[in-house]
Image (cartoon, rainbow over all chains, first blue to last red; front, side, top):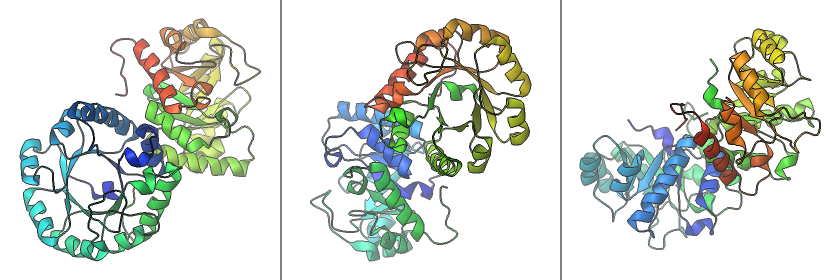
Length: 218
Length: 218
């Protein structure tokens, strides 16, 4: 059973945005600052190198007590014992991934419409990534749909939802106010000189916006 | 019930040895590298500042899922909800600390003789810190007793034992071979440019030396 609290502050990795710094200490600092789940995204690596990076991130996240999600690759997620897999529009369909993974992985799916959200739910997705919330430098081909679209998706799909794309400490509140269970970030943490302070700032913004009675991690 | 696995790689803080760098990212990197428990040691702070630092370290170690031990101060340990307190020879006696803490804290005691070890056990200590194992730059007033003394103490006291003082990746094996359940380190992690790699190296040395069938954290 997927716990939506994992989505509070969801860090998606991107080596390019880390400015050449090694990922492990950055991830450790980010978790220390309040990151609740980590997604390893490696779009430039071949399978062998991705597998090696995933093994390392599995050991690291286990020590740090946060769930690990692998972007795109169900095979790698299963091989390293990840907790979940995240599927974008160009990745394996949710239904196929569910067949491969059974109950061994939770599945996240990127959607940007109500119809896609309903289809992902029907196919077995455990949570939805919705975005881009705001214009972002992380991906050049994204379409900004904004918090209002997230609200419609949340209401229609009735699944845990995380807002992604251009989210930072200044605008996170509007994503939570639209009904998101958390925010996913890349550059707002990984591109900052002090990843711990950066994570703490985004987490604080999320916590300050969560509805009263919401269940915080601490 | 104190779990001796917490002692595998026990980080004791020392701001001076961190070279002016903030403690939080260093501790996060150290835990990512394999540190299993953290002791906050603040010999230069007044009570108010120590309390504030202890609150911050409590939040940090909770996120990182490692137990927190407060050096010397039972009152501060209880105030911040630490897991344990560590008492040196110039601190509150173990018996008094046990009266104050009841079952709310585990208690570690520094000893360097068999008789002191037995007394600490009688008084209610949960684990023993034994040292200095080797000459060290951390404390100027330490007496080096070496791994052989640790072996005698371990056999006599029958408590979990951690070797401290001058321990690093190169000599940790001899401490474990003498019967220690783990090693406590300061400068071998905090004074290194890459705390994560430094912790990983010490942890690997400990794991490689632990008796077969020993129960590793992962």
